[in-house]
Image (cartoon, rainbow, N blue to C red; front, side):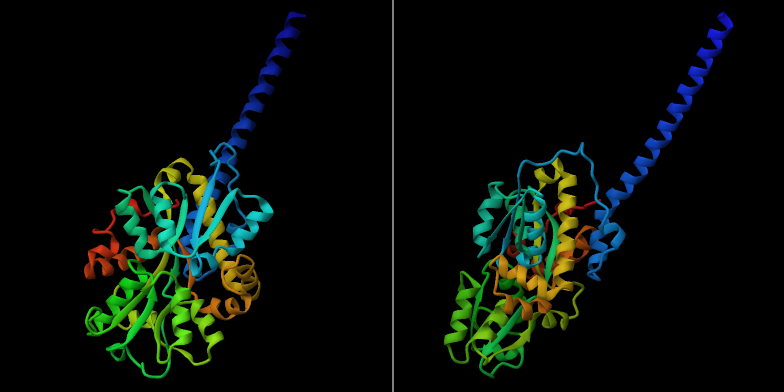
Length: 364
């Protein structure tokens, strides 16, 4: 009887050891899957250049329930291309209740104080303003994406401008003083031997809609407008023509950089506290941009739904809006090159000095 008990005990111990071994192997499998999930977001920036994503990776989402989640996730964007790339995500947010709070503003000046006070977690703003806010907040924000490449155009209600040199003596209406439009325009003018202070008169307006109104009512009027406001102007007045594409003018200078109009910044404290939530947002942002670029008609309906511009305007404008979502190493390469060009021309354009490496959020 005693031998029988010993035999039973040995068998029980053997079965327990087998169970523990099986559990250990199962744990290793889960760790491998989680590692795969965490790498999904880090490849977003690399695949953005072609505006395509790996379908298998797109469907893979990290479900790490132990990761802390923010009570609020507040996102701000400007009325125009920086918001147009978000519309699919905004729509998905309503259906899936991701917990994002979106607000769209008419001018950067409305967003800047909110960022400074920490009332916004991610803000889509002019590219140079990303650096300005980094310096102004003493490093409390980080660039997490480039969302718009060159999208500025010189338009004329007439036929007198054929080159940058033809702008001499003209009055140019524009919005965006102190941000990307001003510094990009000044750089291109100076690079073509046109003095922004003495050879032209630049009338700065608070919003692009004011420039649009001036263009529609004036004769031989010149304005610098981004899409989709260019299309809006042409829809209302067939005499309005695009005479200069500033993206092409930038490229003609053979610089080691590309023209960037907009970017996204994240509060550093927020990113450090909720890295998984930020990375998940960037993944969804990329997918939203990819959808809008690939499905113009459906994207235009969503642009209209969120009162950015009417559907008919969005349909014509979207292919020229250069909407992207570039993150990671590619973000740093492109944005740092662009900011250096601006800084070399006028340090104030980037907030007094170029940002350090800690400025660039890396979603790895």
